Length: 235
Image (cartoon, rainbow, N blue to C red; front, top):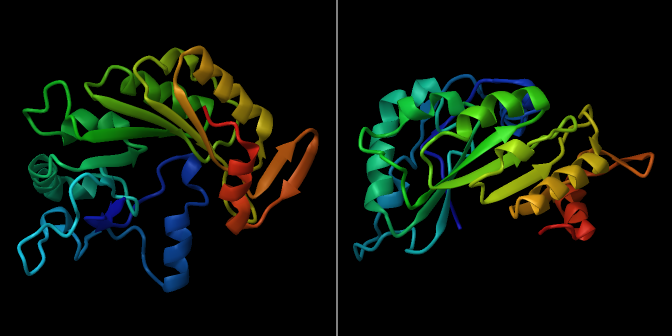
């Protein structure tokens, strides 16, 4: 696994961004998250060592743009160069998430065609309104590998009519002392939707405030992922 952040910075885009970890971390460091800048690791996929070998070894999954959104408008001037590197490194598999799926066809190469074998796109949704808006677009896009990311999930959602040709649905709660609670019943509901459509399901993290069996628990940030794993409900 490798990380590639060719730029950093983002703007809050919808309700799911309210307690964004990027904004919170930048605030502590005195960084303006709304300033989108190209990073020193822009050319990471094609960087080589002294022997001329790629630093990112063949066969790895590369998580792309996890300190921003790959489809953010300010990055339009840089993205085509990223696509060239993705094409060149066909031995790697690139994964990115976006809340801006409506921009997708304006942000891919002209020869995109039916999609790219080594790219997985995750469409992020947080409530029913955003699920219906984004997934209705996502459903029709020419993408070979599609994931749906329900994180942070802030209400019960029905995504069953959008699950055709989806490889994975991941669910997680919100992390913040003021976070909106995650109800375990919502998680189980999405799990059943995935089972019915033969789609892989992952429960990635609880919320800071987690409701189960009529009780609300407050969890430490460091325990959110481990508690989700203990539920043992991935399929």
